[in-house]
Image (cartoon, rainbow, N blue to C red; front, top):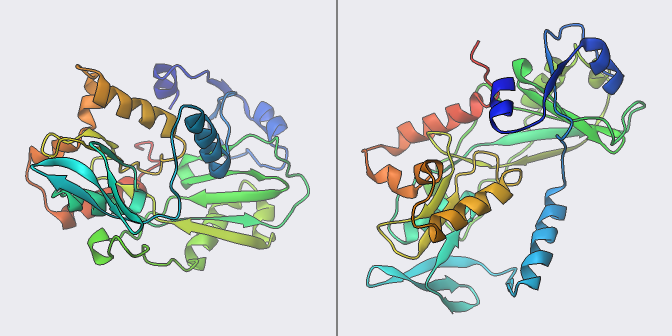
Length: 302
């Protein structure tokens, strides 16, 4: 993790357990063999980030049409010509598909079969507890596959299930929502049990709310970003592998580079949707591989 952080230009240092304890007094670091500290790490609220993007985009002349359902992308003579919505047709020569759990449906509407699979993810927020405050650092415990932070004066805790639940997007239509998710109390309870050695109070704290959703994953664990060679004007920005929010600024840059740069970087080229045309693949194997990417999200290889 330190090597990856250094390569990415992040400021990180190993700190001793006493220093870590001072940063998170409520946490027990007795089991910790190493603690990696990144002072520039943090968190944000997705809705705040979205509205910030909206405000800046509007200053540049962008218009937003919310509460409008896209039904299909219109293709004529082999290239994009518009979008059909429940409010009528929008003429355009380029569509950027950033439709999340519906990205596979939009791709399918132009004849592209892309392995984008929703995988269930859950986290819980406890009731308020003494010792929790919003200035505490975010924490990841890879060996327990957990992440946590203070949510004002409560504890937010989520994790990556070793036996996940994925879904085949062809089982619901573009006009439908992905299947509803009831809280899986067995899974959430295991998160609390895994965290208990570090924060014993977690098993006594009541759960105030549970959040769950369907982030999408790909079989090779990489984004699907860039224009399709098969359908000119159709550009992908999907399969974000749970980085849709945290990676959104970088994904946006990759999209722009893939469209405007005559010779994109090797990394951006590697994200192209065309990579799934080069070798045969089947959907069931791809779904299991995408689920495995989720299940090993925090794997350190030991």
